[in-house]
Image (cartoon, rainbow over all chains, first blue to last red; front, top):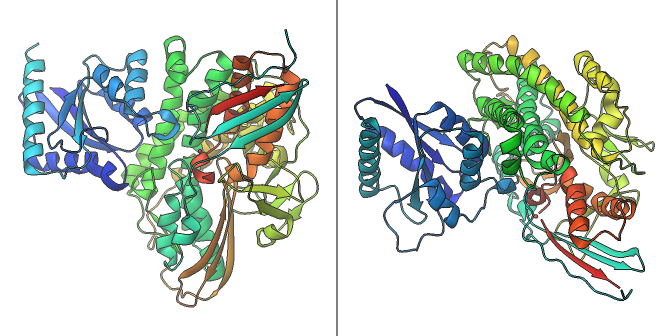
Length: 148
Length: 433
């Protein structure tokens, strides 16, 4: 059985907590995909903690609040690590945010499958619609990966 | 070439320090005539908005001052409140607080050594660039940082702004299984810690000897982290309650962080100052590791700060291990029987970056009515300016602007400044006349 990790990145500050809240909500939904053990985690230091998960997981989904989404954005945005670089506006301490951690992880050869980034509109609440949207994306991605 | 020329360099926000700021440098006739470490991050008013809150709330609120060293703020605050309320925490509480504080030193020192400072000394722009050629070094840094974070989370539920500490002890004791897992990793980390010292001792660190005053906490029993008098290598030895008799904070127009002076002079706090003053208190195993390097302390080479950091990391990994190997769940994780009382109280401890000093006025109901918090980076600010000037003079002002900028940044990063704590860093503007 392969391991998938859904990792909420955030902090207790304001809407930065969104990644944690959405992971909690997804855990309650107990996502099941044949051939995959789905795990859930929350982290507040992207650089060291994310890389650790990337190294032990067969597939990672990283959920983080995206501040530079249009204010009208109400659904999640699905990105690759490369796409994230273009959006990065690092507010993390020592400039070691999610985007930088993913570049570092790539240089270290920390993952075999490209992690998927799930950007959460900064202004949204973890509502049922967004949870279902993410749940669908995770199931579809893992099913496709299982067949590869 | 004319001797009358003005050159301006604009560098985007400096990576590898916590926060944002700028450096302005003016050179006339091959002399530095003006040097300003401009800290322009807006004041954060923590001292004001903790007023009217009770002591346990304040312990969690001051943790929000810093994402890197929240434990230091919490430990210093709780120490002040317990001093005032005459609470003597149980030996278990004292030991576990030390283990938690060790976690913060491990994560902060591992991060700075491997990801922030090392690229300067190994010829890379960043840890990301360094990772291609030195993946093992970067991995070790991340591994140690994660261990430190997890040690903090063991007691505080999370590593950023933990919430486990309260007046009298902890909200809850960690489960033995969770402690055992961390103990196993601390055991493995001992070799890592030793290899960090050996690696750094072989790095070509600049030879940058300067005359400066070292200030740190000191006590008779151990390498002071949580308690001690404030001492300096020029004769000061004073209880923390008398800090204001010797130190002065000043506002300068170019900085939103206050400058601090000891008897009117800049001074150094942090790992190098601590090791310069406390090396006789190093545990034997750590002292032996340092002795193998042949590097002598006290040291006047500012770039030996990174060695001092590694020595301290070795020490705290072993200390945390010693404490947690014999872990047991206590009957009470907190002293519940205490009453607030009015008064003025003080706390001081050694944050990873140096002495952190707090003063509180508390009313009879236990609400804070006034606060003064002096973080390490603001204490180092005047010393950093002094160091940049001396370092650039020694380096040679005829180097081009890019070389001067890089050397100045290296000097600043060497302090591991936390500008968010002091209030951020780096745009360099050089004027040559």
